[in-house]
Image (cartoon, rainbow, N blue to C red):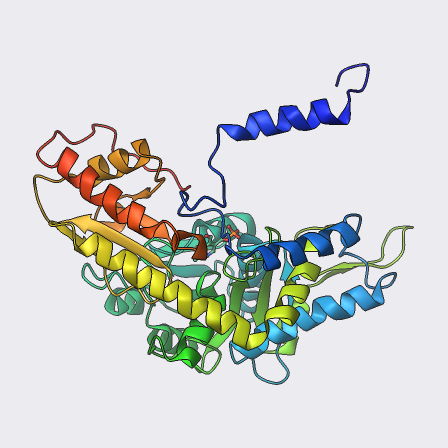
Amino acid sequence: MQQHGREIGEVLDELDRARSGEPDPHGGHLFGLTYPSGRDDLEELAMQVYRRTLFSNALNPFRYPEQARLMEQVVTWTGELVGLPEGGGGSTTSGGTESILMAVLVHRERARERGIERPTLVAPVTAHPAYAKGAHYFGLELLQVPVDPVTLRADLTAANVLVDDRTALVVASAYSYPHGVLDDVSALAALAQDRGAGAHVDACVGGMVLPFAARAGVRSLALWTFDVPGVTSMSVDLHKYGYVPKGVSVVLHRDADWAQRQWFVYDRWPGGLYGAPGVAGARTAAPVLAAWALMSYLGFEGYQELVAELLATTDRFREAVESVGGLAVNGDPVGTILSWRSTDPALDVYALGDAMVERGWYVNRLTDYGGCPPSLHVMVSPAHARVLDEIAAALQESAAQVRGAAAPTDRSARYS
Ligand SMILES: Cc1ncc(COP(=O)(O)O)c(C=O)c1O
């Protein structure tokens, strides 16, 4: 740190300069990481909450019982969306990864109670790295389920072989990060239940999309919520398609008893009773209260409208991809994520992606891991509606530019 402080303007100028070369989350040029709603009123409301709660601490319900009550409402409302039964429970966390970590921890504890010393976690190869992280942190063995090469959903025959008496947890994505497809939640949960294991539904992305899509009648979906017997926990991120700034997700458990096990409670020190439902100790309440505010403001109907528009944009995006000869959308994506591969040997899909990136459209690569096709990947946000014609044109131009050209030698991909 420098010895003398600087003027506020100077400090902010430097921050602005640092950010100026990086993609603007509002511009619609990013296809992951950020989820701009494209709505000034929603951003203004979140900002107002942040101004009021800048120095909040979500750790302490003893000192801030009213804020804790509002935070609890966020959990209740999210539970209602995904059919959490009476008696279920959960908590807010800092994000999808922490929600998943807590679900893995709870299932490991349950497995230990059943006398399982070396528990396994069975997850599709398409499951988010947070499951591998959870397995690593909490000492479970990760067993990866291959996906069907056409549907890109977890292969049930393979899952059946992997799920056994050591299984603590089976994972199903609703929907998956790479391809946006809905795993067969009923079948995977039934496999888990047969062996006394739990089943976690990863609705980090889909949880704030699918309930509204189904009610709006814009998607007809197989069962994926707590209505499926055997589903024991679920993660739903509000900092994705809930349009809250980063820092809030909800983890839910079918039984209160399970939800309780998420808590770490301790009083063997001089500082008094300490309790936390997640990895973090002190953490800001701002995103959770912003979630409360946005959910209050939009209501079910407001989100439903946003989702209906967003899925219409996603459908248009899909048409734009499919109108380029030699590209095919992978599987049957049910929500806001699309991926596509090349079916034309003269059109390398990564070359197409690089050409898009050169034009300032930051599409992401998916690798051929686990037999998945090398592909390009987008998470669609409302902000893309405005620029969809430009994206469609860029896809056509990029394909024309690279068709017949050499494939890039660098075949690596980065999650971004
Ligand atoms: C399906 C899925 N699960 C979990 C996560 C992890 O969420 P986070 O990045 O909030 O930790 C993501 C992130 O994109 C995801 O797509």
